[in-house]
Amino acid sequence: MITFREFWQVGAALLLALSATACLAVVPGDDFTKKKVAAAPGAAVFAAHCTSCHDHGVDHAPPLNILHLMSALSVREALISGAMRQHGLDLSDLEKTQVAEFISGAKLGAGKPQPPAPLCRGRAAAFDFDEPPVFPGWGLELGNRRHESTELAGLDKKNLGKLHLKWAFAFPDSLRARSLPALAGGSIFVGSHSGAVFALDRDSGCVRWRFDAPAEVRTGLVVSPWQKGDRAAVPLVYFGDLIGNLFALDAKTGALVWRQRPDDNPATTLTAAPALFQDRLYVPVSSLEEANIAPSYECCKFRGSVVAFDARSGSRLWQTYLTPPPQIVGKNDAGTDIYAPSGVAVWNTPAIDAKRGQLTIGTGDNYSSPGTADSDSIVALDLAGGAVKWVHQSLGGDAWNSGCEVTPRSLCPAEDGPDYDFGAATILATASDGKDIVLGGQKSGDVVAVDPDDGHRLWDTKVGRGGILAGVYFGMAVSGDRVFVPISDMPDGRSYKDPARPGLYALDLRTGNTLWQAPASPQACDGRPACFPGIAGSITATPELVLVGASDGWIRIYDTNSGEVLWRFDSARSFKAVGGGTAKGGSIGGGAAPIAYHGSLIVPSGYGFVGQRPGNALLVFSTTP
Image (tube, helix red, strand yellow):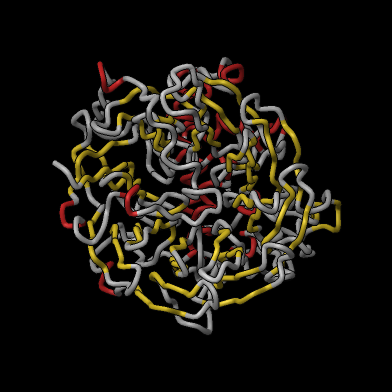
């Protein structure tokens, strides 16, 4: 089993090949790894043609530690017809392929070619104007409770036994699947690792349209509402990509309507779905800068923020940064300038509080010293102008970057973590006594409840052990007075006084007291490669059921009252895909979660992050033949 520390040591040697002369990793690793990187055919091409921009953030150029997350196909397409086509003119066709394979670490078109899913014809291709968006956004409602009614879900304890796999879709040229689908107009709208965004017919899985973004689409998708039956409506689909682009597409055709970049920092990435409310799009801005561990890198300059856009035009309305502008505060051991303050990324979807005219978010750690007052916090911003209304900081002085996990530790801040971001989306919930409560889930394993009027703490319950790989990672759910908490607690190479507690837990919304526990079975991973038993993704609840996808690849449905597992399905295997190819399932995680609608269950499978099992499957189950 590879630890997090080992992952960074190997990954840095393979992927942060920033030397312009030999393209060698600057982080010490074994000689074989260095030679392998230097010998890669595309390494010299990248060094000669790409490092001058991508090593220095020129013209918003993403650094290599972000580029390496892209698929080989999306890199090559960017050089042929995308954002890098002018630079690609200097490269031969072979050199473009070599660069794409070097950056992605994968062979282009390796393996048996897969037949594509068929294009929709006839009624299957028709946009259904009688079906406005089933859910208003990623959180399934504006408060992010991740809750569905039993009537809407069409699933209950009585019909779970009828669930069967109806069809599987294979995301082409993809090694991961972590985008939460949106449902509207008879379509499933979903993004993929290659950057392809699809509108799929919900009944058959055929393709209504496809749009190719420049890079991986991790975020969930959001569809703008319209009046049922209004055939003149022009609904839009919103999402972001790995390299920080925000898109709005025509939901009927997939045509690009507008494209923006919420932040100019070259390490910007969009991890979470935006929140849509009253024709405004509220976009959380994150980055991958804390993964850049080259001693020559001026760490760190990124500032987390939330940006509001006019949803129809894409015009920027306001942007609220969560740290002051960074300044030079010293030099690292290599003599490179250190910048601070930095970090405080926002990688969760805002919860909208219409009654108070505010949104709430959870923030991440600082990347360089010193720590600031808004890191590892729950923050409320004014919807109209973005002003900070209140901040509840759960942990101060948390400065960390991945330089803390390798040697030499020239980029590691003095605090050395513990890297306890609020990764899970905040939730606005109302208890049975009428009290409104904002919840935050932290990588420390804590669930924190605060008052939405001023942010003062109501309760704090430590559920998981916590760690760099969480704790609470991406999302909780609420049904009635129950808070459902998924815990990852994946090994990360560090020592903790508490034991790991992966699994699912239920708390009382009013008090934070534990109602039941469903720890993951140690036997769940017996014989499975790249398997961890925790829950590193989001979940969905109904009054009766909790729908969960886990790192071990199993989909489980729990009883909300007891935590008993009522239904399970192993997704970490191969499936015959629509069109006759093969869809490969794997771990389930990130912002993706099982969602239910009228007796169907829709699950992306193949999280593939830090040693977890990759895949490229979208699985659709049904209770009807």
